[in-house]
Image (cartoon, rainbow over all chains, first blue to last red; front, side, top):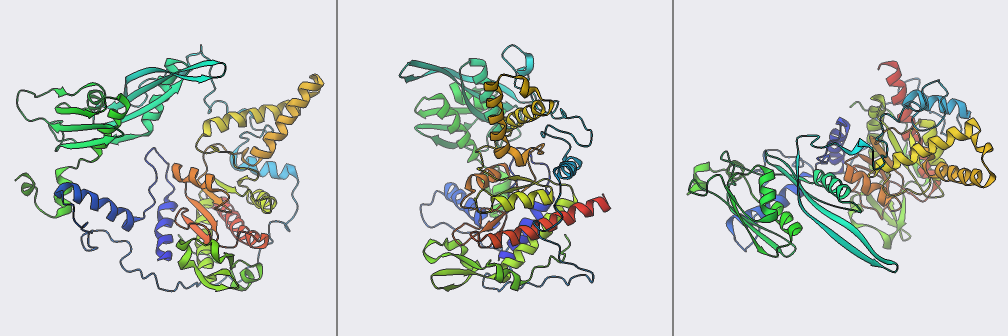
Length: 308
Length: 236
């Protein structure tokens, strides 16, 4: 078991591609896959009885089928080459002077932040690559809409912390970020100035982006409810009736749905009216939704059965 | 990935004491597959598995080094700090010797600010500007310089996030491991019987208390990195 774990993780880690925002998922397939299947089955069939676990024959990819955890792992290294000399340990090798070490490092990485350049490269090479900490007046922060995401501010509030010397005021901004093609993110940021807070929350929002499942008429596949804290949100798709091309929802929910690009939906805030919690609750509700295609594939039935 | 010969013999590892674990009461039950026996109240790890993991880790490290990836070795135990520094210098990798400041990787932009300050202070020291300042200022700047040298001295050549991180003791460097996990950086971890083997990507069950065993493992990994570098030079 351990051997194939290392083999599969080796193959994933050995690719070592550039890391973009979605995190590199190390495959631990059986545990996560089974766990992700069972609650969905629960919500779809609304059975409060035993969780039906998927059989290993249902999954089309199988990682651990032929692994027996009781197997003994053998260690058979390949034979050494003929002229193999065991290398000296890192203490006993030839003692290198500082100059040699600095030269070797610089050959590999450039003179990065070391402050001295033995091979004659420019010492300040990292300045152009690093974003300088700009003061207030410079134009370094005017990077809006860098990657096709639009930002909308849901709420900006002035919050206070009372200390011995008096009151300390900060601004808390809640921003929803989205391209109108099904990706949204909700972020919070606090700072002493409104603009700084809005920027921080936009950065935070870009870190938690979620994909919204939509049909080809820009609406949801089915109803769903989501709750976060005391806020509960109910979302419903709209049919071709007189509420077409309308998003009927209030406040934070409306902004999240608009930024996602959903054009026909109904949403209601049941429970608390707190803007941040409602925005997060819509994200939770949206995450619970599944496309018809995926459900049909998992259950192994044709899609027409789902609409009966 | 080709498997090469890494000169791992079990007798050598037994002499260094790699197979000893911690006391029986402090174990983590997830280490059960890697523990072979219990002797005098101490768990004994299965050396064949250790050797197998070590050789796979060396293969991975060799492959990565031959593609010019950046490594970071983290080891802050005061027993192991010295050997970590020397091993990393020998392998031309970055290292963290003293306390792992929180957010070195996740808050990389702030760490870069500190590294820039470090570089500026070094430049001032080299050009001799520090002698022209009044004594108090000069003393303050020198103190800052030594402070930055102890904590960031090992990563002063790092231009971006590293590609592989090698951690020496999981219990001690839990923050470092968590940072790498949030960022998705593959990790190789030297694990003892009281650690969780599922957190790191490749976990090598060893004895993290004895200096000899840490030195042995680091030796093998450093050798693999050096081989990788030289193979890159031979055919880029």
